[in-house]
Length: 381
Image 1: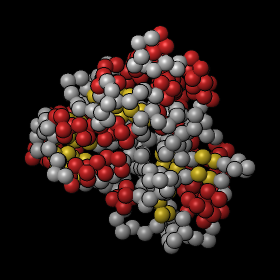
Image 2 (image 1 turned 90 degrees about the vertical axis):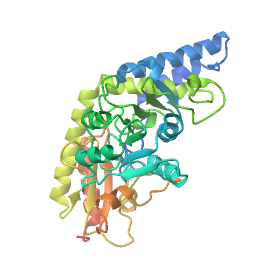
Image 3 (image 1 turned 180 degrees about the vertical axis):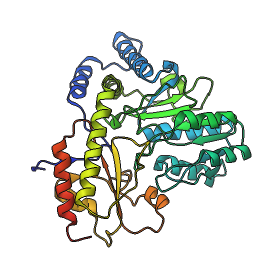
C-alpha cells in the first residue's frame, strides 16, 4: 500500500499506539517465565499479570478477583452466556437481534439444544429498545433464572444503552444482567462496583493493544464453570498458559485511554460532527442509521438509500484509499451483509456504511474522505 490511506474502521480493530509498541517490546524482553512455574522467572511473570489485573480493575472500579483474562471478546461472551446456563440455572435469555454475532450465535446454540429460551426485544430504526417492553418480559420471566444480555455500545450503529437505568429494571425483577461492553471499553467510564451489571467484557484490540487478549468481568457471588478446561490458570476459570505480553499491553493501553479520556472523547466528537456536516453538504439524500444522541462519538453509520445493484461501495472506497466497513468483519476476513441494518431497516433499499474514528485522525483526513466519497458516488444519486 504505497499511497497514503485513511483508516476509518477503528470499531473493527485499532492499530497499536507507538507507546503501546514500546511497552510491548519492553515486557517481551523482561518476562518469559511460565506464570504457573514456581521458580523466580515464573513468579516474576505471575506477579506481573496480577499487577496488570489490579490496574484494569482500578480503571473499572471493581475487585481484581472479579476479572479474568481471556483471548477475545467472543470467548468472554461465550463464557458468560454458556456458563450462566450451566452454572446458574438460567433458562430464559432476553436480548435483541442486533447484538454482536458471538452473542447471537451463542443464543442459537443454546436454543437449538433446548438449554435456554431466547426472547428478543423490538428495536427502532436507531437500534433502541424499550425499557417498558423489557419490564413486561421480565414480569413474565422474573428471577435469577433469567439473564438479560444487551450490549452497551452497538458496534455498527454506535447506539448506547443506559446501563444504570436498564440494570435497575433488570435487578428489580431479580434477574441477571450481562452487557457486552467490548465497544465501549476505553471510551466510556465504568464503575462496575456500583453499576447494576453482573457480567461485562473487554477486548484489547478495540483500544489500541494487540489482538488475542481480553477480559471477563464476573461480579462476586456468581460462580461460573470454565468454558476452557485444563490447568488451574485464572483461578480455575480459564485454562491455558496466560498471554503475558497481550495482558501487559492490554493493561497499559487501557490506562492510556482512561488517563486521557476526556480529551480523546472531545476530539472524537469534533471529528464525527465535522464528518457528518460535510458529508450531508456534499452528498445529497443520505440518512443516518446512528441516533442523534446517546451515541458513541467514534461511530457513524450512514445509509445511502439510492445506492442499488451489486456494486460494493466499500470496495470503491478501498480502491481510493479509504478503509471503512459495510458490516461486522467477523467471518474469515470477509464482510457479511449486516444483520443489524436488516433488523432496523427491513426490506429497505440502499447501502449502509460504518465510519469509525480514532483520536489521532485529523480534520484533513475527514475532508479528504468526503472528497473520496463524493468522487466514488458521483452520478449515482
